[in-house]
Every structure is written in C-alpha cells, then in structure tokens.
Amino acid sequence: MNRKPLHSLESHLNRRRHLLQLGQSGLLGLGLGSFMNSTSARAGVGNNEIRSRAKSLIIVFCTGAISHHDTFDMKPDAPLEIRGEFNPIQTPIPGTVICEHLPKLASRAHKYALIRSLSHKDNNHLMSTHHVLTGHLQPGAFFDKVASRDDWPCYSAGCEYLRPRTDGIPSGVNLPTFLMSSPLTWPGQHAGFLGPMYDPWQIVGDPSSAEFRVDALTLAQGIDAVRLEQRRSLLSRLDQTAAVSRDAAACRMNEDQKLAFSMLSSGKLSQAFEMHREPSSVRDAYGRHPFGQSLLLARRLVEAGVPIVQANMGPVQNWDSHQAIFSTLKGRLLSPLDQAVAALLDDLESSGRLPDTMVILLGEFGRTPKINKEGGRDHWGPCFTGLFAGAGVQGGKVIGRTDDIAAYPDSAAYSPDDIGATVYQALGLEPHSIVHDRIGRPVHLNEGKVIEALYNGVEST
Image (cartoon, rainbow, N blue to C red; front, side, top):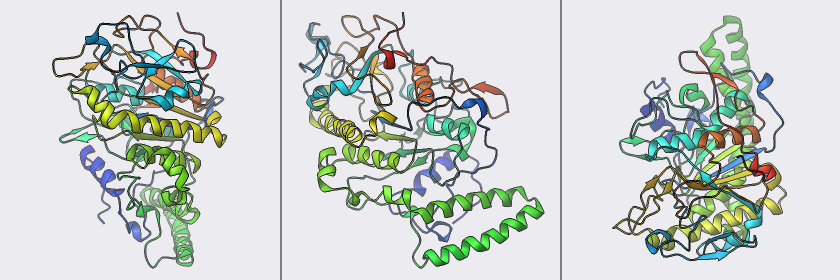
C-alpha cells in the first residue's frame, strides 16, 4: 500500500473512508492501517481538565434534519397545514406528548430530557451539520461549503487534542455511513484545522449485515501472537536507533506502530465489532436493521473505551423530507428509530452505564411549520428539538417552549455552540480551552454556554 502522505483533504477523506470499508485487511502486514493517530504535537492537558459527568458520548444523528413538528414538539391545536397527519400520545410525564409513531420513546420519557428551543440561523445542510457536530460556526461559511482543513474540529477531535490517548483506542468513531453526496463532502466529520492526526475513525458498513466485519483490526493471515511479539521486539530496537539519530519522522512512525501493537495485542477494540458476540435477544431488542445494530455497535464501542461515537441514522440527508414526509416517516424512519433508541436507553440503564454515558439525538436543524405543496417540510434553522439522556441529565424534563406553530422559541434559545459547551464539560474538558489553528493562532475551542437546565431543570431567562 502506498504510504506517502496525502495532502489534499478530499484524498485524505477518501483514503480514510475506504481504509475501513467492510472487509478491508492486510495493512502494514498486521491487518491494521495507517489510520493510527500520531502522538506527536499533542496538546498538554493541564487546566483543560475539569470534573466530568460522562465517560462516553453517543450522538444519534438524524442527517437531513428530523422534523420536530412530527416527533417531539407537536402542535395538535394548530391548523392542519401546520400540525400534519400524525397524532400525539401522552407520555408518563404530565403534559408531555410526542408522536404516536414513537410509542417506545413515549413510554420512556422519564429517561430523557427534550430541549425544544434549539436554534441557529442557517438553513443549509452542510453549514448546519458543521455547526451542530462541532459546536462552532463554520469559518468562512457559505452555501454548500464542503469540508476543509479550515473547519472547526468535531467533538472527538477536540477530545483527542486535549486528552490524547496512548492505549490504541481512538477518541472517536463515526459509523456506519460517511456523510457525502458527490461532489459534496459534509463538514463536521473530522478534526478540521487540528489536522488529520486527530480525525475520528470512519467505519463504513452495515452492522446488521451478516457479512459485517472490520478486518483492519485483526491480525493478518500468517501472523500469530508469537510473530507479533517478534516484530514488536524488532521495532523496539529500531526505536533506540531512531532516538539516537533524533529522526523526527522515524520517531513519529514508531509511536504509531506502538499504538498499533497495543491495539492488536489487546483485541479489546476488534472484539467490539464482533456483533455475533451479542445474545440474539439483545440484537432483536435493538432491531435487526441498520439503525438498531448501529446503536448496539455504538454501545459496544463505548464499553471498549471509545469516548465518543457518532451513529448516523442512514445515509446523508436521510431525513430530508421535502415531499411525502408523513409516508416517509411512518414507512421507514420513525419505527426503527423508536426501537433502536429505546433499546439503547434500556440497555445502558440495565448495565449501570447510563449515569456516565450521555446520549444525544438530533438533526442539523428543524423543518418548516407549514407543509409545502409536495406534502413535505423544508429546512428550518430557527427552531428544532434535541433529546438528551444520561450522565446527570434529569429525565422527564422539557426544556424550552416554542410558539403556537413551533416556528420560533418562546423561551430562552440554545445554540449549537451551547450543545458543544455541554458536551465538552460533560466529558470533563474545559469548553473554552485554547487550541491552535492551522497558522498557529490561539483560539477558544468553544464559545458557548453549558445548558445547565439539563441538570438542574432551571431554564435561562
């Protein structure tokens, strides 16, 4: 395999994406690719660490933007062209209703909080995806601005930069799809200006398929534990030579190889991808579909020690319902989402992991209040809803109010910047930590405010 550096972003993203494609193997002669995060140029921890609420974060991302009107912020008293075709159902929380096609989540409303007053100013998929998944506006943003190394880092990249790992476990994994519609590559999926060494791992493949595997995390044919240790010993001697020669490139490569050996010898991460290890009853509870098995895989990855997992609920713009929104939601989207997220919350609670695992479900914006002539709803940044659970979040709470047609917040609004501040603080990282952009300028990683109402139930005024 060609190991020369790839300088263009698109080449790098394509390489990373295809590297972990279903069935990829044999890299470096060990079954592990050159996607190892470099340990050089790491940021010091120091004052960046604060008391954490969560060990892990699972982002359930409804790419394309799930309709808040037809799920978590229904307006049954609004005119038909606003309220739509679905009916609300009561949850165990007095006065809180959600969509009839989310019955499992309705019965579990005591396990999560809803923020109905999320808001930002953009109606473009790419810009809004960047904002939601990084907690920062996209630098130099314009309509359909594709991913670049001037972008802000995604949450796992910020985590890796401030809290670098040396155990071979990545700080972030994105699965099971890569957000791209040729020729547009969605921003917000990588480390942006921090550089490719901090990118999360991208897994592409359907975890519900019997053929699903990630061979890049297993030993190649003919390599056993004895030979692996022999190669480790040889590299150790090469390390000493590199140290004497002070060859920075050689030292950096050796650090990457150490991480590779650590990962391959432990097997902890590779076992997380072995979905057959789960009891059939658990797999059935999540649902034998991509939504369900992706969230089950996300749970397995956080158990293996991955701090941040983003599970995309379908291919890019899967929830972008400009036409026939009600048949689309009812026919193929809401039921598997309902089953998968409910099972994830139940699973985390029964295993005792919900108190230290934050779960966030959201899209990049909301949908227009008025149904269009094609029977769909269009892009709407001024108002949308997010579901938050675990890691100290008070379940059964509804934070924020919207007006009579769910067009605008009717109480304090919370921005994607605030989501970012909440994420970083929950993970024990100071949101306003200083990082450096591509030309070395110091900047604050995040400039939002922590959404304290998630924890104390008291809303901002």
